[in-house]
Length: 494
Image 1 (cartoon, rainbow, N blue to C red):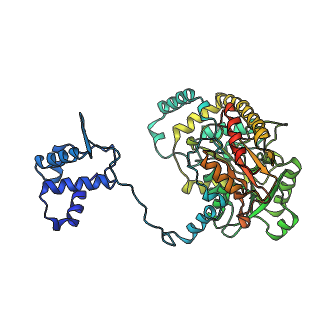
Image 2: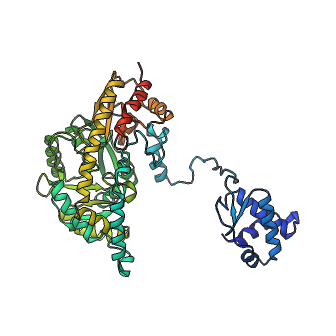
Image 3: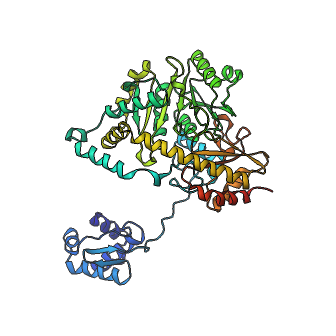
């Protein structure tokens, strides 16, 4: 805090009061505390230091501090003087103007959420309760082992590694990811095709910027992932929603003819939000049509490690030689979201040009975390953790499914239970207002996102016949499912 600047500004606006210096400093500090410039818990400068900084007598500062203490604005302790809690005035945001100072592009991006029917149901970004989607069982993560690996990584760092890192990511991590993907997901790649990012949204942004020009057509699933819609709009692409059925994304001949895509975004292993799994026949057809159209498929394999029923399905990327697929993965679901590490696997023929582009603007850093993650993968701890979570999530899925059958399935059907970390509860009566019901659930402390609010592209505001709830179960103990499902069922129309 620059106290001289603070006092000078206050004095300019209160010069006509003619206050003595003692009163002026006291009033200045009190206004700063009430206005939030000096937040609760802030330790004020020592009286000698502040007196020297402001060119005042120390007694002047002592008087101001004593007055503030007598009024309850500060608390003296052994180390000095601290601003007390709960004394500041609430900061009130000014009323928004019609434009809010945003560019037309930013206003359009906000419209992705603002026109999205779910945008009127506001959930905190760190929502962890039932049934917030995409949140893993964070209390089950092996933190002690992870801390040891982080500690080893930091001890091994050289001064040179404290500089900006490789824009493609640390080589050890890229090699470990390539090895893991070949063994676990059937992805055909080497380390030179793997690029580290700080999350799936970052991966999407860079892919759309790298592989499409403004005005090109991006297909995304309808209903689908709002982050892909936002990324497409942000890149200036023409976003077209392609309907999803029980076998995943289902483009028609009319879709291919009327709006041929440059990029196709899909979540084939566990469609978001419906939970559909793209059938083998549909995968091969999509690969063939994309190759014929000169399009690239962006395969978001966000929670593919958690397969609960049926034979394992390999990634689309490895189904055919030189597949026209950009593969996205993340460690947010398998480990924890705050790690902020994800990756892109680029086709071999595009990897060199992509690397050059990344070198010009990619985030460079988090070297210790990347090296620790490489060890976590190499040591087998990652595979062990995933296997344990797969068993746990299967138990929680079963508990939720059984509870929903008992309490909430009189007019609804469960979808998407063969994989992932969430279920879709689809209402059979399309007249049921899932958005209104989602609001009522939120008032009851339950996060139940409305399926119909996930409309995309030119079909925003309607969910392609998908009307119901998106229910994440990974972080909810099995023993809590029955009570939660009963509360959810009580909200549904009789």
